[in-house]
Length: 229
Image 1: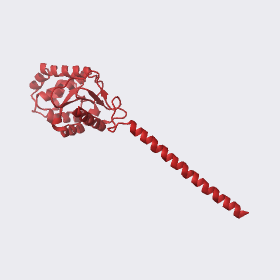
Image 2 (image 1 turned 120 degrees about the vertical axis):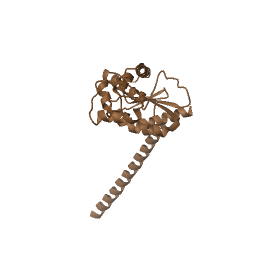
Image 3 (image 1 turned 90 degrees about the horizontal axis):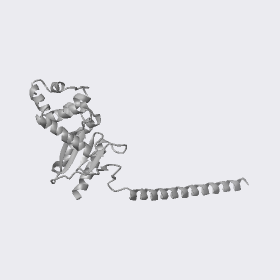
Image 4 (image 1 turned 135 degrees about the vertical axis):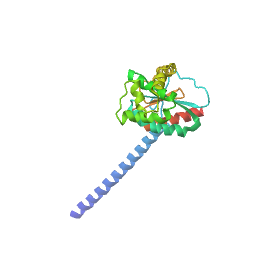
């Protein structure tokens, strides 16, 4: 009697193992099917308009063979500061394929001050040497700049003549540069920084699915897209 019970118990265990195995195979088959369906629904490149980048309603017409890249930034934006070194490397890697521009987003009095400082440095041929150093002064050294006089003091003693800086800072040329940047930001509907506009058509910025490094991947994808067109 005990042997019969043992045999029945063994058969039951075997049947149970077989049932579990069949269930596992079915589950795997379902997962494979679902993953195939999902892959079919996602583009190979993985980037989708409206999710990873925005198509601009009224795009700019870009002349010339190079693809235009505009970064809207602010010196007080820590994300712009963190983005800048990787962006600089990315721009260098693109070579002659692109024309890269920076434009300060000036939405407040202090942003206007720092935006004019950016164009003043460019006008005085100081941008290459002092752009990143100015970023660091704000975000690493906790410097605060509230006036053009304080901005002059940022530079090493004797490098910049105070009168030359003040004359350039207040010049019609710098005012014109700021006006262009402000008009461009309004036209392209720039509301946050850093935001990058590719070929006047596509707006790329950080989101819940796009970090700073992935922004560069999206930008590279859009350049490929434009190159094919």
